[in-house]
Length: 83
Image 1 (tube, rainbow, N blue to C red):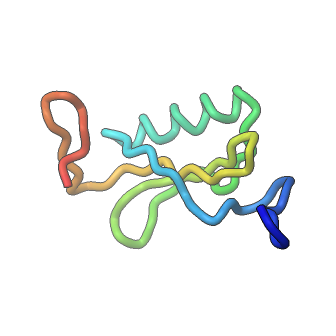
Image 2 (cartoon, helix red, strand yellow):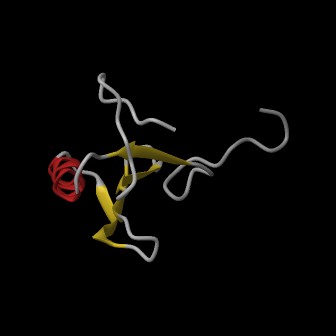
C-alpha cells in the first residue's frame, strides 16, 4: 500500500498469536503437531519464570504462535479460557 508496502518474506510479523493449553503435555503435543506440519519451532517447550510452560512456532506466513499453559488458567464448560 502506497510508498511503504509491508515486507514480503519470513520474519516476525509484528504480532504473536496464542494457543492456551490446559496442560503442559498439551503444549508439547501442539508444538509437535506444528513441527510435523512443517512449522519452524522458534522456542522449544520449556518452563518460564512466571510459573507457566510455553513454546513458540512460526507458521508458513511467518506469524509467531505462543503455545502456553499457566498454573492459574481456568477454562469454562466450553473449554474457553476465562479471563
